[in-house]
Length: 485
Ligand SMILES: NC(=O)C1=CN([C@@H]2O[C@H](COP(=O)(O)OP(=O)(O)OC[C@H]3O[C@@H](n4cnc5c(N)ncnc54)[C@H](OP(=O)(O)O)[C@@H]3O)[C@@H](O)[C@H]2O)C=CC1
Ligand SMILES: CCCCCC(=O)O
Image (cartoon, rainbow, N blue to C red; front, side, top):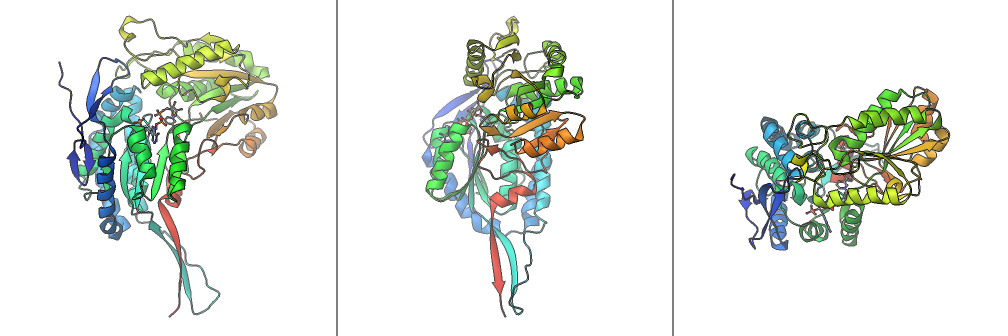
């Protein structure tokens, strides 16, 4: 029997167990009987210690040059790259995505670290001519101070790093609360920063329950900025807590992302995009495709292609090379997805295939659901309006492109949206009229690029942007300086 490791918090440069000694377990969703590790159930005492360490580290970290801070990020990137296979395997064991996707995400984390390391040597202000000829006016930027990062389980390396790396490079110190689901993965990422020699207190990891540590971060008077990715319900409470005490906050939340298939679309490419966008990572991306809106002229031909391709998807343990679709990340998500499949049928949609646990005996102990496709989906149904965060696609028929765009906009979310067409005018109309932060032509709804702004409209976001050079807007404050001799 393989021994189960105990994992600790990382506070003030030291690996520390939770002060009250409470621990819980991280479980493999491919086999609920497999424990990945024993993880801390930290309390506010641990959080206070981490916030104090982060505040104590602020002055020295801020005094470093951007290039000086960047040197630590380059080192962490090299170490993470060296440990890519180990981090990928741990991610798959903790939240179920296939090993290929987990290693791909870890490589993306390496690239994010290197991108922001370089940002430490780019301009942070402008010289603006003053009306007073004897004056010198310019802008500069200063860090917020201590930033709290609350991160989800679906991208347990890329999302934390696209928050932590810009926070650090722009001079902030950080207290990171990872999703409990992927706590062991977060420890491995933290080990890379530790090995890179990051000064103590600059980055702190506190593992614990969302209410205790996540809400505690949002409410903490020693934390000047909160960056959150996760559900709308939690995001709302985090934002309200931060707003109540005047802290800056950034929320990236759910999506209900459409792909529109126009009459002139390449149906094979569009079907492949719907499958990749809708089922990769078991549909557990905020950018995942969930609604497939097809212009009626090509509806039957497209539907048949989509069903035929989906039927060949192999479901299994993400560590197996033959697996294309892994389990849901945890039992809560598994039950949520099965609940939406029930409600889809109850509301009158037709389940064309999938939506059940697989029959294979060797998969009985995992949270597996076969990829599901509904048709006859009305825009008012729950499966057309609510984020499912699982391997479920809802087919909808539109009379023409204008109606397809209207349907695409007929939700409270606005994160990502795709259109498959060969017509430039259709593409430009879609870009103009689609209310989404990510608008993609002949490309799936998922798969954002780290150098470009990322974020949603409507209920998907608190309307800042992450990633790329957009990140500087959240992690700094602008000072306008006016000088006279
Ligand atoms: N937009 C996106 O990228 C994502 C969206 N989601 C959505 O969230 C749903 C559930 O996924 P899940 O990971 O549980 O998302 P949650 O919003 O529940 O969790 C996201 C993060 O918030 C923490 N958290 C939980 N409760 C609180 C709280 N009261 N105050 C502060 N922080 C809290 C979690 O900690 P802990 O893990 O300890 O509970 C985790 O670190 C999914 O079905 C999906 O709809 C989820 C992930 C990413
Ligand atoms: C939370 C969602 C992250 C989106 C990552 C992607 O689409 O590549």
